[in-house]
Length: 140
Image (spheres, rainbow, N blue to C red):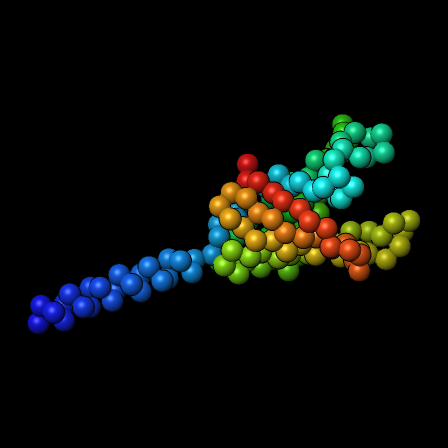
């Protein structure tokens, strides 16, 4: 009888350990976004309007992800774009944003995909059919 109880306790510990390792990353919070020079949000740029700062304000509810991308250029008021189709799958997140096309053109969808590790994430963003560009972010 003692052996059965010991075995049951060990089995419960193993199962508990397996479920805790499968828990999704907690991405709720504000993340400061960085991109390489020339990429969105990177390296200053702004055509004389001042450096661009970007952040992600994320809210996770299970495997659903909501929030916004906030962009601030120089002394101008920040622009916010809502996140759509947000998903969390383990340590991976993905979402899209929509913005007006240049010169009144058609709406453009930007797709973000990233892997989260603690308070950092690394991933790619793709605007429309354009080239994927890398980005990283750190939780504030």
